[in-house]
Image 1 (tube, rainbow, N blue to C red):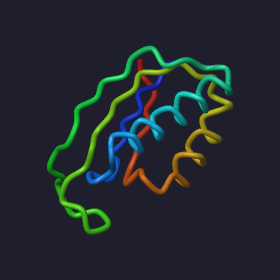
Image 2 (cartoon, one colour):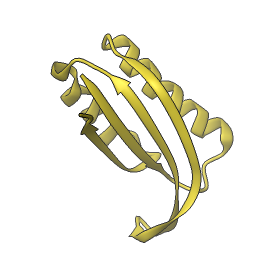
Image 3 (spheres, rainbow, N blue to C red):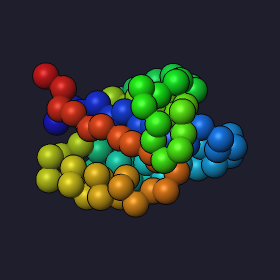
Image 4 (cartoon, one colour):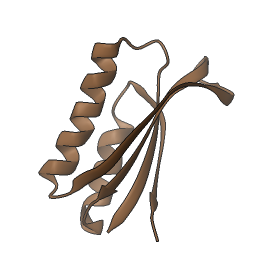
Length: 93
C-alpha cells in the first residue's frame, strides 16, 4: 500500500544527526519489505504552535510503499525516536 509520511524533527539538530535519523527510517522501511519512492526535504519551517519548547521544526515528507501489517511497527519505532517532534502517516489513494 502507498503511504505519505511527514516528519517534523527538532530544528537545532546538526546535519549529521538529521541524516542519521533519515537513514534509520530508510532502514526500517527497507527491512520491513517496503520502499521509499520519494523524499522531499522542506527544511526549517515555523510551527503553528510550540512543541516541546520549539517554535520551528525541520520538515521531511516521504512517499513510501509498505505492507499494512508493518505500519504499526513503523509508527512505534518513530514514536521512540527522540529527534522527531511529530509525525503523520496517512494512506494515499
